[in-house]
Length: 65
Image 1 (cartoon, rainbow, N blue to C red):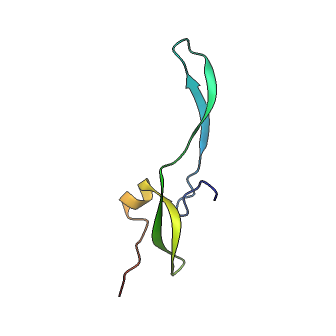
Image 2 (cartoon, rainbow, N blue to C red):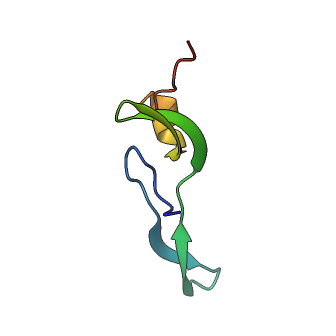
């Protein structure tokens, strides 16, 4: 699984973690992805969606009818 949101393509970003003495070590900032059923391209599928897309309503849940 690519660690990426299937709606907005938000993925991991690299940066540095700084200690008290300001020594920098490499680290990865990963998005908060949740496994959720969403409607993509007219079909319902289970994919990984970031919480920003869930809160804003971009991740449309399928209607059980």
